[in-house]
Image 1 (spheres, helix red, strand yellow):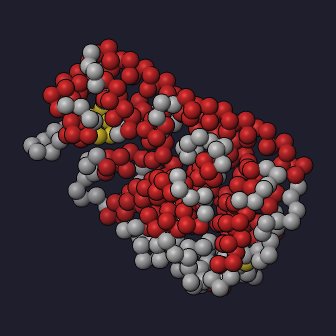
Image 2 (tube, rainbow, N blue to C red):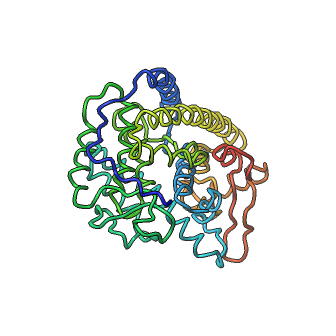
Image 3 (cartoon, rainbow, N blue to C red):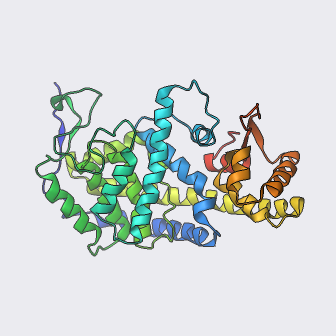
Length: 374
């Protein structure tokens, strides 16, 4: 007998009852892991530059949960101009979605310098996320005016797995969600857990809700200064447990199981904070080591600029280094020649005619990927 779709939990947010006895043992470890990670963010001389590959990896994994197939290496190759001219258009479309995710995140952070975390920030991030990609025809930056549902591709609403709130009731519900962002709460991490689940349950946009909901996590932590930088990456944990992630969200509306969802989410925050800490620590160590090594090898006053460029653009064309590193071209050529002779890079694409060569700063990318890729 076919099962009916799970319907949105009308009137169930914020939940009236949560089993705090189950959550309290998880709050200390989650807060401690985030504080330890924040210590590394504070220690980084420029987290936006040094953790740029991790931001790209977050965009890749968050988009992969929604079905994209591109890897971080492919995204960076594309940015460096090394993508093959006959690349599959679907892969190119995947890459553009990932690049949009990163741009949407930075646009939201820019707005947080002027505004509190609110619907205006979320709508603007959605507009950037959807710009020029497959969802561009689905009202970028505007809430849906029609029903939507979640289920197998092409299914009818009757065959859906989940049906969010009706478009008529959405404005009032999203206002309630926004108010809850700024409510006093017994615990901010539990508050974040509830906000993420409610956003996904409302599904306020026609497309991009999952990515935007995951983007909300670092924005919330940053807006409350739980983290000094919006560099928090949760999608690796969620992507590795995709089925449980969706089932826990579904159980909120189906069973009213907010506590079970919060348990899952607090564990995700704890584990990802630990992994983010380890990766950021490894990147900081690599940065200090390579900065000193580049200074020693090149004896150049531009050694730090060269180092910063490599950490921001670990896959890059030779011409981009000459133009964008902020180094006079003569000095840039000498520095790059020296580093290539010392095997700093892997060669992704040899220089051919007017086509510049493309190099890979492999040590940084392997840390970001968490495995030997290059």
